[in-house]
Structures are given as structure tokens and as C-alpha cells.
Length: 246
Ligand code: PXP
Image 1: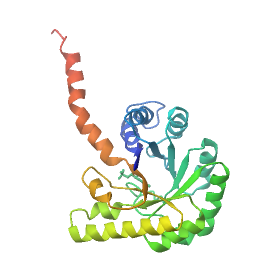
Image 2: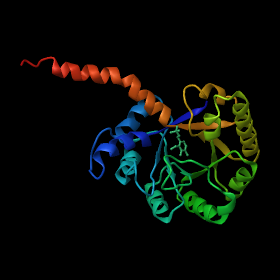
Image 3: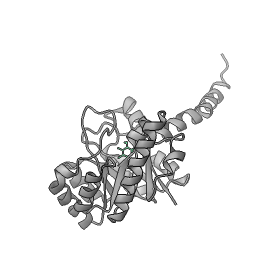
Image 4: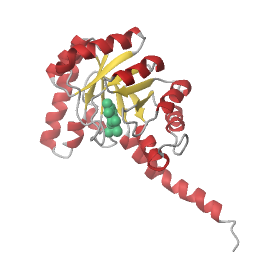
């Protein structure tokens, strides 16, 4: 069965837009995580960025306490966040590249050029009982480097597939790259996750990629929740206006 990890960063982005610097505020990503779990999600993904632009430290500690599925912590390979991860003990850490200017994680990790540092971090996390995944583009040299780092998983970056989806030729190319990358990773003993830019339209096509274990999806799910929940939100508010007598 192909599993779903729901990325709840976007819920925190909305909260921070109004309540940055405060200890509470809505919407609450932890409450959202519980809704996702109750709806059948197999895991919760949260990215604790060095700039704390969305998920805050208190969120990951609360998530660790309350979620009953699996916590996937996305993080840069930085000493500060690594120290938090080693204490927090998420089920899995996905190492991602991080640039302050980016809107979301834009590229994959260049594993080949940071091999030694990534192997060291992978070892520390594994020693703490935490599985490790590396977020990479589906290039054979990155996949081979990931196997040499000794990570248990890779997460294939599906951004190119998502961006080229409306162009049949480019989409096929991106899909073929993902499929051969997944095959290579599988032969090397890596478990294969995938994510970035997946949505309700492109997912049925992505299912052609072999050996997938779990997909991490955020934006499309939270966007749909906003639109599909809007009618109920307006009706609830109207019900509060109804008893008013001028
Ligand atoms: N996987 C990784 C490693 C990511 O960085 C992101 C984006 O935060 C996702 C999956 C989810 O991407 P999206 O929000 O486009 O579904």
C-alpha cells in the first residue's frame, strides 16, 4: 500500500501570518495533524526550518507527544537542528537543503558533494534510533551517493514532474527519470519516498513510478481543505449573526 505523509507546514504558515511571536494562535498545526491522522494519514511531516518561518519548536514537541502514527521531521543538516532532532526522536528525519530566500524547499540535496557530513549526521541519527531519508532529485549519481551515505530512505523530488505536468513530452521525461531513479534506489537497498508539488491531478500519473513507499504531500491537501471547508466556515459564522436583534 502506498502511504501518505501529510505535510502540515502550511497550516503553521497561516498561523504565523497573524500570530508570529505569540505562544498560541489559529490554525494550530498540531490540531491539524490529529485531524489528518483521524482521516487515515499514515504519518505527519513537519519542517523545522532554521529561520522558524512556519513550524515552531513548541509544535514539534507537541507533535511528538500527541501523534500516534509517524513523525517525519524535515530539516537542514545544521548542528542546531540536529541537536533538537536527537532529543525529539522523530521516527524519521528527512534531510533537505535550505535557503533563506526560497519560498519552499526548491532543490534536492547535493549528496555527492556533502558526503562526509551527511554520513556523520546519518550515523548520529541512526544511533538515536531515528531512520534517515535524503531529499534528492532522481539523478543516478545522487542516488548512488545516498546509498553510500547509508540512509534508509530517499525522497525523490517530484517538483520537475509537477511543474512540467501540462507538457506531455516533458512530463514523460520527468516520469521516466523518477521511474529509473526508483528502480536504481530499490536495487541499492534504499526505500523510496517521493514528494513536492504532488496534487489531485498529477498523482494518478505518478502512480506509474515503481517501488514507492510513501508520498509526502502538503500544499495540495491544505489548499483543498481551505476551499472545501469554506462553506461550512461561512455557515457557522452566519449562525452566530442570526440571533442578532438591532
Ligand atoms: N517533501 C519535501 C522534502 C518538502 O520539502 C516538501 C515541501 O515542504 C514536500 C514534500 C511537500 O511539498 P508540497 O507542499 O508541494 O506538497
